Length: 432
Ligand code: GLU
Image (tube, rainbow, N blue to C red; front, side, top):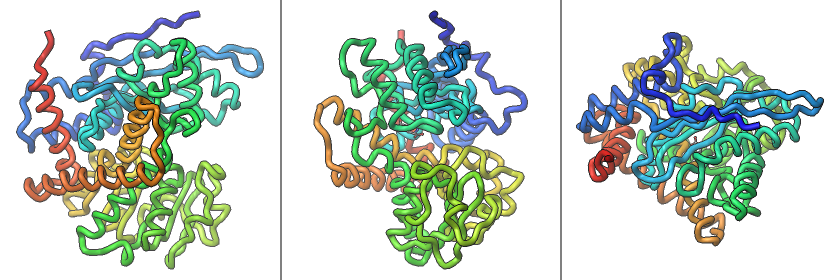
């Protein structure tokens, strides 16, 4: 049975719902409005950035293990492709929505432009709690969803990757489902695959590595090197655990790390490798801790650097008053709400934005795509070296805007991204 419900939304149906003031889409649009007021961008180009190029909505029927059929809803939002194919993750999460996908796709457009990699922005997902599916059910869901969006993805058009609730195994199934229908092996259709089928070494650690690199740079910038800095990390999945462990290796004192159940806390510094990451043992942080605190206590710790690396909207107007960190480095996508961001700016607390800090993921996705096209694997050392180079170059570009324009770090990152995107739009013009 085909569920041919893919559509291209009209601009009007993309307005945020009235109760969605903290939705990813509303936050992304308010951030865009704030940034364009500071940057000289052609208003005609800005008008195009406000809407996605398209949103594909599908239904995904699968057979559950008990023989019943259940139908899930899925999306792929494609925001802008002026600089290259659409690029961005696939989420399996109960709170996935059309608006969330559009907002997250916008952030991918800026992220790829900040990193100066030749991709546009997309995001997709299925409204499902993957914890409630068996492995077989997850595989059936992934394969059927891939089939439903097959006409709008491809190695030169739109390249998915892992995001919340999906991983390298999910990408293997997507790559296989797509390749079987095309009757040839096409590794470049997704990134974040296992290296044995064309994935890149270093890809799964990359978002955490970039968070660590940016934290190191920002700590030096404010004259408090990692060896003298305390860090708290919310979330111990692929972003948080890798960031915490690298920062620990590089001399920082990581005083707290957390998962959904709470945080491990040691003011003298945790041994971050003795605590299992979500991939190693799901939701086990507090089981391996001598001393625990609540998640909201972690966010309120008096540390040099706070890294929210778990979910969107972790810091909102409701709890920002408790935040005592000197600097915030965004590990998750959208962990600081628009209102909280404004309050932190008034308090002169620097917030290093997600579109720079966690961009190591999509950057190594780009390296993976290059390896797939060339059918040639890079060593982990090469991946990490090139990632370091790209991160430092993006950091320099953002730091220059920050200093020249005297704006927030987020606005500085938007200035870099919007400048590059506007030039590309101006050069290509409007078709037809
Ligand atoms: N989901 C990741 C992100 O939000 C990676 C996307 C990708 O590699 O395409 O940046």
